[in-house]
Length: 141
Image 1 (spheres, helix red, strand yellow):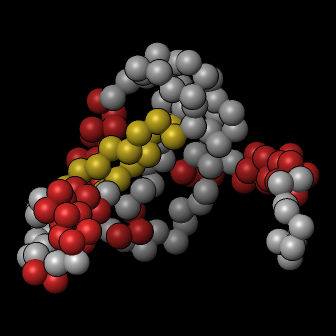
Image 2: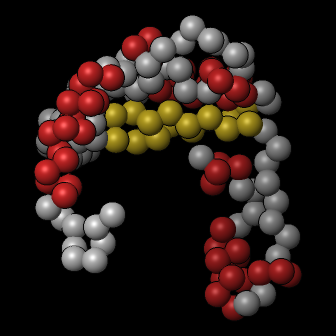
């Protein structure tokens, strides 16, 4: 998301960083607001369909749609419109992204956002032993 706001040439910044001359580079940023929405495959974060033609995906987070606007609300609106215009089988994205930057919605819940807490808890429970099996001696907490 932050890269959409960078107005300076990234190559110039990287080369100056490598050469130790970064302090000599004027790094310019767009003063607009940015909003990024991740489009994910169905069943994310569980294992989604593999090989679904988008070009090809291995499931999970497919892409991040980023939009700019003169306000957080405008950036969010543009990002949602762009996300709605992208089509692939099983597409899922949260529509609450950026709402906290617009108004204090006290009644918004994870469920309203399409997040199932029970499924998330079940997922964590399902992978606990697998994650524990990856610990190396001396890294236990």
